[in-house]
Each structure stands twice: as C-alpha cells, then as structure tokens.
Length: 313
Ligand code: RIB
Ligand code: CA
Image (tube, rainbow, N blue to C red; front, top):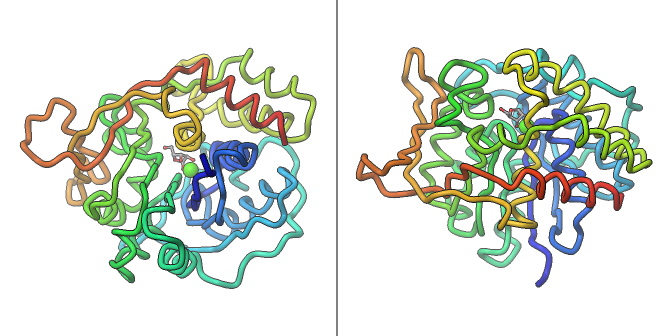
C-alpha cells in the first residue's frame, strides 16, 4: 500500500514533537507533504521554530514548514507555557534551527495542496488549535470535499476538560474554528482526552526511549521527563498522556484504537462551557454522526510502535 499523504498542523509542544518524529520514522506508511504551524501551546514564532527544530533532530531539514495563524479567529490567544515551558519544548537544551521557514502562508499551502493533489488523497492531521484548518475551509470551501480524512487530537467528553472544567486545550483556544471544522462534513477521527489520557508514559516507557541510544530517543525521554511533571502533579498519575502521537499511530496501526461514530458539537457560547465538545456517545440527540470518537487504545502496542519507529531515526 502506498504511504498516506498527510499535512500535520501543529503547535509544538513536546507531544507534538513526538508525533512529528513518529511520522518521520514511518516513511512506508506516511508521506509528510508539509508541516503547518499554528499558535497554541506557545506563540506562532516559537511553534514554527520548534517544528523546524524537530525536523532537524530527525535529520529531515528537507521537510517544508509553514507559519500559519498567530491568533484564534475571534478570541485572544491562550497559551500553555505552564505545561510546555517558555520555549514550548522545555526539557533538553536545543540549538536554533538552520533550515528555512517556507515563505508561503500555511493556509495557502493547505489550500494549494488540496487543490493540486488528487481528490480524496490528502489527510489533515491537526494536533493544535484548529485556526489554520478553519481559515482554509472558510477561504476555499471547495477543498473540504477533497480532504481524505481529518485525524485530529482535541476535545474531551468522559475525561472532561484539561484547561477548563469542560474544555480540552486545542478546542478551547479557538472554539469558533473547531465548530467550523466539526461542521464541515469531512470524514473525521477524533483523538480526545478520553483516549489520550490512557496513553500514559511510565518510567519503563520513558527509559525505553532513552535506551534507544540515539539523539531523538534521548530528546523524547527528556521532553517526556519535563512534560509529565504537570500531569503527574495534577492527576496524581504515574506519567503524562502523550496526546498528539495518537493521531499518527492511528494512521499507521488503526487496530490499536477503538471508538464509535457519534455526533460531536462544539460549544461556542457557554459561559462555563466554551470549547466543550459535546459527544453524543449514547446517541440520544438524534443528530447525525459526524466523527469517529476514539475512546480506547492498546497502550502497550502504542508505546512499542513509538519506540520502534523513533528508534529508526
Ligand atoms: O490538550 C492537549 C493538546 O493541547 C495537545 O495537542 C497539546 O500539545 C496541546 O496542544
Ligand atoms: Ca499540540
């Protein structure tokens, strides 16, 4: 089977970085057409820089990285330095990237790529706020029907929120953008906190990254060492959820994941619930299903895949 053509839309972020490395370590399954950076965990100047740092770490300075939207559609940007650190990739010391940022705006790259590639052959993998994707859909509605699938990290239902009591960060930052994407009608797979909170690092899993004996393996171990302190303190868990790599792992080995086709709506008006993803898991609303909502994964298989593929870099 030929590799799946994808665009990763991202706000690196340590877990975004692991997702990018997993994609670059899996060339038989993934053809990464480009990386589009969006403001989220940290402001855009840092997310576009961090995306290039990760590509160089993987030995892939040829990957095209584009800068996209610096702020949500209608709201003030909310960032997450409290989780990811000031740089967004806190943990190890990192040199500035040498590879260039592409001149083209990320939104134009998304539109041009979907218009150029045969319809139904490009998958969008958003793992940050959905501002770039929504802007592309608003500016060029003709591309929506050309999207093969959207496999995104975002939202929460049974796990409730991680940035507010009701909302997950990626959706909370730009609820209007999320509503546009969820309502667009493209086939969607949603990796919410319901499943990513089961993709928890453990000491053994982090040491398995370090034991790879490679620079990428060492970096991933140091990123998770830093990244997990917040979740361990907040949830009292042994480790931290590796949210974003779940999207790429799904593209490589979908059998690791289980879910249900349900209707998902995004709350944009609630005083206490703005950014909440209302997943009709028990199908009581009568609203048409618009997403495959993933609820569980084989965590051992997921981490084994991560170590094996990152070990190839
Ligand atoms: O809520 C988790 C999500 O928010 C992940 O994508 C993480 O990188 C942050 O962007
Ligand atoms: Ca992210």
